Amino acid sequence: MTVYQLKNDFLTVKVESLGAEIISVKNNEGVEFMWQANPNVWGRHAPVLFPIVGRLKDNHYFIDDQEYKMTQHGFARDQEFTLDSQTDSQLVLSLTTSEASLEKYPYHFKLRIVYQLVKGTLQISYLVDSLEDSEDMYFSIGAHPGFSVPFEKGLNYEDFNVSVDPKESRTLIPINGETGNVDLNNEKKVENQDFQLKHDAFVKDAIVYRLNEPTQVTIASEKSQHQVILDTGNAKFFGMWSSYPTEGNFMCIEPWWGIADREDSDNQFKSKYGINRLAPGNQFEAYFSISIK
Image: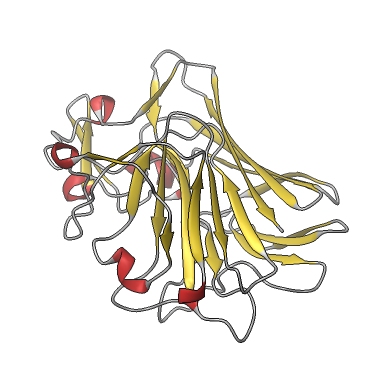
């Protein structure tokens, strides 16, 4: 495993080759904004979710009558990525098909993660290339960055608020906390998605909304001079999550291009809710950004 560093006058970012995972984002004052993966609470920082987001119903699926098994969020987060290129401000890591991946996922692919520092913003792109000769490729992808809250000593988790902009009605998609699957039969419109951070806000698992446009999700406090803003870019959904009932001082903001299986899924991957379809030789680009102020 290798740790890569990006640095400018505003931020210092560290990324591990294992999972191409962001493990640290510090400002020029040395303040750490990423959750530091306490294994007794949640042992990750910012996993990349591929080729599924969330859980499959009963952890399996079918493609053309062939059964495959895969656990939550897919396998990319646990694989070593290869360095494609690096400068002071940009890092490109990649993952390609392997014998191990073909046992879980039958498609040939290349996944590239691009991290680009621009002043106080980390721009992130996921580039998915289909290496298939004749078949369409099906997949989901997503981000799962966890931010340390509070940002400074002397403040509490409950001192911080989450705000979602622009202000508009959005569709809340409930998740069954026992199965991890989405309950589309009980979707509802929510006029205001802002809330004060409390650990029991996540008693029913992640809070998930459907997206129609780029959305800014901000973690901030009147008692803090700093804030984190995640711009969802071209994501189709976003989730907000923290551990419960084990209480961790972190908050995840997760842009997704895909979602967990629906409760009544027939486990057919090609018709999976929220799935992406990519023609042979084509490329899919997902992008979002994280700004520190």
